[in-house]
Structures are given as structure tokens and as C-alpha cells.
Amino acid sequence: MSLLKEFKTFASRGNVIDMAVGIIIGAAFGKIVSSFVGDIIMPPIGIILGGVNFSDLSIILQAAQGESDAVVIAYGKFIQTIIDFTIIAVSIFIGLKLINSLKRNEEASTESPHTQSKEEELLSEIRDLLKKK
Image (cartoon, rainbow, N blue to C red; front, side, top):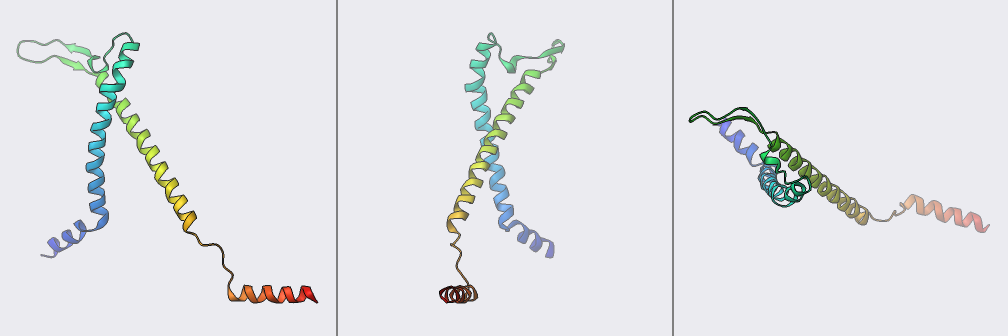
């Protein structure tokens, strides 16, 4: 029973739940970026490169025989995956940079101006009195 209780404590921690939400959102974001790259960015690049569709680029190692499929190295899909990863990485980097700058601005605005302690105030008064003499 203690194992079940430990697991419940572990699973109910905020960090685990935050991580799960992040993974789910990350997977959905990956699909969005894949669609953006595959459906919006790559067609114009394919036109520029003479009608090349990256996902169709491959090397046939063995042609299809009978009911067996062809054996191919699909390097075009690999190129597509690298482009997807690069766009995701840059997007996450920019997002984190924005979040960090917002946190710094928030911290700077919440910092109170330096207030003098009672000792500093007394020392300032003594200094001012000595200057007058």
C-alpha cells in the first residue's frame, strides 16, 4: 500500500503535472510546425529548386518485387524532419527569450526603491548637522 501512496504523492506534485501538460502541448505544437513546414514553407522552396518535393527524395536499394515493397532510403523525409526540428527549436528559443525578458521586466518593476535603515537615517542626520557647524 505504501508504494501506491508514494506514487500518488509523486503524481500529484505540480512539477509532474506541469511536465505532462508541456509534453502534450509540445506534441501538438510539433504537429502544427510539421504542417506549417510541409504545407506552407516547402512548396515554394520546391518550386525554387525546380519542382523538387523533399518527401519524395529517396534512393531505391531494391525495387518492389511481387507483394513486397521497395527498399528505399528516404533521405527527403530526413531533410524534412531536420527542417521541422530547426523551426521548432528556433520557435522555442524565441518563446523562452520573450518569457525571460518579461520576467526580468516584472522583477525590475516590483523591486522597491532602496529605503534607508534607521541607522543610515541617523547617520545622515548626524552628517548634516556636522556640515552645518
